[in-house]
Image (cartoon, rainbow, N blue to C red):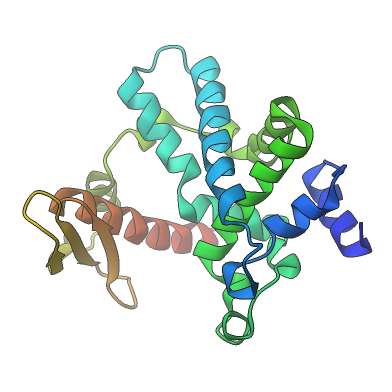
Length: 231
């Protein structure tokens, strides 16, 4: 294993028996056919199970639906990208020339996918127990900070309450695009609120889901700026 990969392994708290698995987990499809997509598929499932298990044990009073919503907040793209940046996974990515030039090493979607692929690689290399150790270590502070009373409010409610506390106006939602057959439509919605530099978008299989995703992204941006201002 190269020095660089040893550095990442140290941050993950796991040494690979087969370094090629880690190399593949860090290779984007723009770099070639032997990329992280299959490991990402596996890692997504492993992550979901381990986070679900941690929440099940930590919050015995939550219902199935409530546990599902809390888990969704912990495994979403933005959370994974944040964790990816903490271990500086972008420094180790293998990207094609186009992705390099466009800043793919710091793009949320790529960081999140690569981290899931790394989880999948740990699972293949060391088994479920090692994958759980790595994931629970990276997620420790997030799990300790989980407040179900906040997370279980839907995103639109959280955003509106946040804006009201700041004495700002209500957010607006506009449907930008509806595609697909009537029984399988895809919606793209934008949310605009005071304090955002530009509208943020959400997508989903219904207008409600798309609006909730847009609201969640708007809230993450606005609440993050407030936290920074008071940090």
